[in-house]
Image (cartoon, rainbow over all chains, first blue to last red):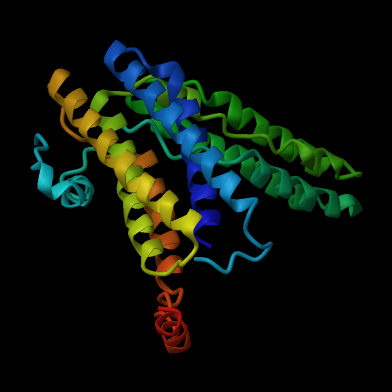
Length: 61
Length: 223
């Protein structure tokens, strides 16, 4: 349940960051945004990898 | 309102940042609501196809995809406004309704609002979005740690807490460098709503069971 929720929320965050990316007018903001995107994508990949090891119905919340 | 947190209070900091957002929102030039997903508008189109009997009104639902887009346009009044195209897509849905086949309703890809929203991204607004994200992630991880006994899940939760703490510190630095404060936005509010649902769901899960007595007895016998 927890991993599923994290996959959903990380995916949502990534989509939002991608929509915001073209707007990174300020260099500092653009840099931070890219860093956040990289970290979120990495976390999402990790969650997906763990999800693959869990039963179809996530009994570990 | 600058954000400052002691190292010892890092989780409090994350939650505190979110609490900061709850106060004093200035959304006048908000970029608009979170863009509707293309899938939603598409379903409206299917309703339109049901109106193949000539009921153009049903295809009006497809037009509602356009309404979503036009809402984004209203948001763009603050600074940028290029979501007119989305409204046009909604109009296409209406046209489909008029058609006798109803298939036109599939023009649901309305609301490409994100582009117009991005034009006014500020450090404060970006920080608001990310603080909300990090806060929700940390709270979810904390709940998971009390409910899961899976080693991988627990490890993931720990890493999320650690990573979000570091990321929050980077956001603080960004705000300091740009002399900005955390700002509210439609994006942040959308994330907050989603996070509330997620946390409620996780909280409803049963707490992790304590170690069974039989396991303890077996452990003692083996000593």
